[in-house]
Amino acid sequence: MMLLTAPGGTASSPLAAAALHIRRLPVPVPPVAPFARPAQRRAEPSPLGAVTPAAPRTALLPSAPGCSSGIARGSPRRCRCGAMSVSAMFVALQGALTADQDIREHGCALCPQEIRKVVQALEQTAREMLTLLQGVHQGNGFQDIPKKCQKAREHFATIRTQMESLKTKFPADQYYRFHEHWRFVLQRLVFLAAFVVYLETETLVTREAVAEILGIEADRERGFHLDIEDYLSGVLTLASELARLAVNSVTAGDYSRPLRISTFINELDSGFRLLNLKNDSLRKRYDGLKYDVKKIEEVVYDLSIRGLNKEATGGVGGEK
Image (cartoon, rainbow, N blue to C red; front, top):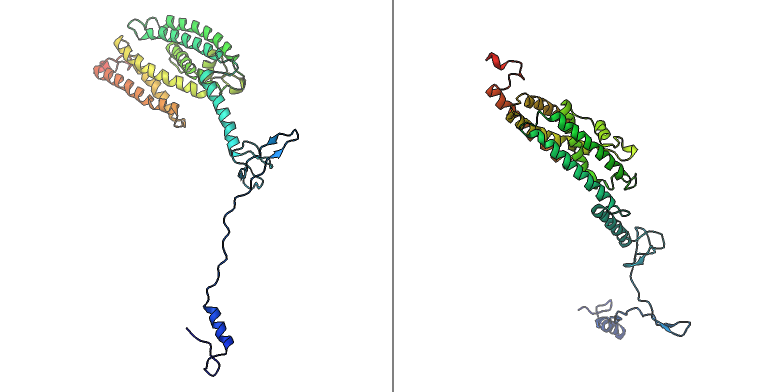
């Protein structure tokens, strides 16, 4: 340790020695006050003399970015700036979500049973028509195709009446809100209409013609209408039914019908390839069309190698 010395190198005066002694002493550190909790509000007497307990202090959180006023943590109220808290927003969303789920599962909130009753009646009529048209796959069913189509046309009159009843069971501007209730049966009815038209004319029915057969609109702006995806789903079901009909035609001895069905299905497949389908249920249904095409091509191939398609090929097989 160095000592203070005079300019001549000798020890300094007593004052200098005292200064050196003070430098050697430790620096005092001021004591730290303990953390004090905020004082609780005292209970205040009410005007009637009763003691009103003081409200507990709660932390304040800003309810919106940039909001400095804040609201109590967990409180669903709006803050002074008018913005709603996140918890209040999700409480409101949960209420709306619960109401939508109840509508999807149990029907309209105003008439929970009415839509389901009409849809069940439509499903029953569709099952009766399908049972009737399944007779064309039997051995003698090809001779009775005109009669079966005529009987199926009579069922469409009942379907039109049921559709008129369904239109009155929900608000006209909420078609897609209740669409899931009748989507499946409507696709089934499109298939039945397309199957009847094919058996009669061997052509593809248009969406406008199906809407007219069912007694609904083709234009969305006019109310209860035939959705495009429902129409396409019904047409894809028709393709699967025609693949089965091609096999049963050979069993019944009708060797020319599979060739016509093959031409029709190939044109149908080419048309679907022009559509930009999303990765949804319709796309999955379309992916099954290639198996129907392959099944019919195998039937046509078997007819060709056995020479059973002479009439359809204009006598080419007879020249061999």
